[in-house]
Image 1 (cartoon, rainbow, N blue to C red):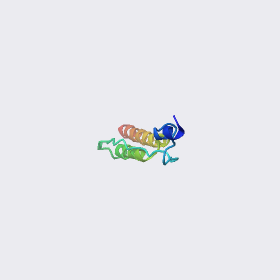
Image 2: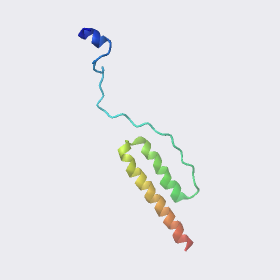
Image 3: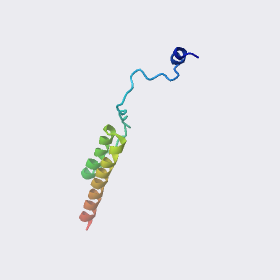
Image 4: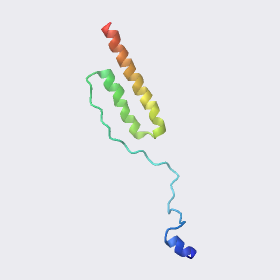
Length: 81
């Protein structure tokens, strides 16, 4: 097969427009139902921020949400005492 024929068949041909930019994340569309507790709702609403971030940045969001939920739970325990 000649080089021209190979290229025409798609063998070894380079993409027309190579992209060095990473692919944009696709939003998951996960919804969080309100709980009625303002502290919990504030914490969980932060989960939507992960949709606009690359995967490696999700941990920061998850840690922030976890911290907010932990604080809300601690506040409930304090109010019960």
